Amino acid sequence: MALLEAGLVVSWSSGFVGTRLAVDHAPIFLVVFWRCILVSLILLPWAIRQIRRTGPLRRSGWRRLGAEAAIGALAMGGYLAGVAKGIELGVPAGLAALIADLLPIGTALLGAAFFGRHLPGRGWAGLVAGGIGVAIVGQDALASHEIPVFAILLPLGGMAALAIATLWQARLPAGGDPGPLARLWLHAVVSALVFAGLAGADGGLAPPATPGFAVAVLWTGLLSSLGGYGLYWLCLARSSPTRVATVLYLSPAVTLVWAWAMFGEPLTWMMVVGTALSAWGISQVIRAEGQGSEQGQGSERRRPARIAPDGPSCRS
Image 1 (tube, rainbow, N blue to C red):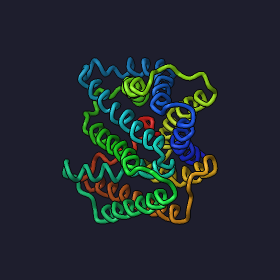
Image 2 (cartoon, helix red, strand yellow):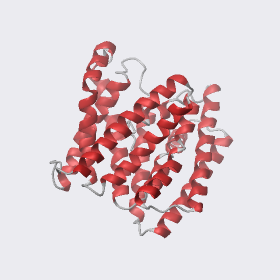
Image 3 (tube, rainbow, N blue to C red):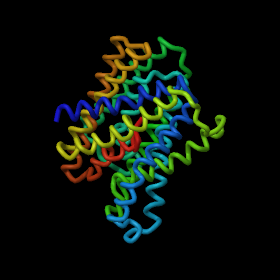
Image 4 (cartoon, rainbow, N blue to C red):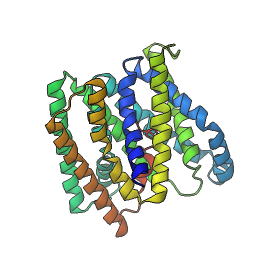
């Protein structure tokens, strides 16, 4: 189990590192467009088989697939657009990973604000700790690089899009679920359309015939999207959602070290301390929501972990 969890953390972190690699070779929206195309083509046979087996059209009709498509546009399209563009504009990969992995905090805040979801006291302490940790890392990153504040807001917006999609997905009825592979395929197809527009506005959809571009697309498509997604579900089948979600919050630390070694991105002791503090805060939010679920106040606790890796959907 430990080896599977280690592989999950590495593949999860690889998305942020792969995105940082991609910005050196092509406009980032072009890379993400072809990443979504690659994922959708690979998953197509399995998606067709799963859709035929579960029969979502017979049970819930096109309305359910329309909702899933809209969720995918947020969970993969909105999430990746914010995170990837932020990294392209200079946000260090480790900081982008840390902001993106505030997802449990984002869903907890939105759930409390709009759906009346109760969060125990330790969860609110975790919210504060997570925010302070991000502020520490962000301050050190800004001191090391000239990064526009707007660029840092982009990963935050991507995380918010994924949080909204997470809560929306949690409120869908259980019947008519197309299944995980079909859902990921649909999210990839819808997001390919989103990034076709964004990449087209940036200059076109033709892929550059360079090894660096090919490596970036294969890295993010195979290792980050399919590898992270597959290992996530494998770990979830052998463990609990709380344990898997907690393990995933090792990824910002791994990303910090990986990006430092590969690209010379900033890595200071204060950034390490901030990352550890944020990870602790997020773990408290996860455990607090778990307590709420056991008391009948948070029956949707498992959903944030479920949708995140698809976007992640194909998380970056």
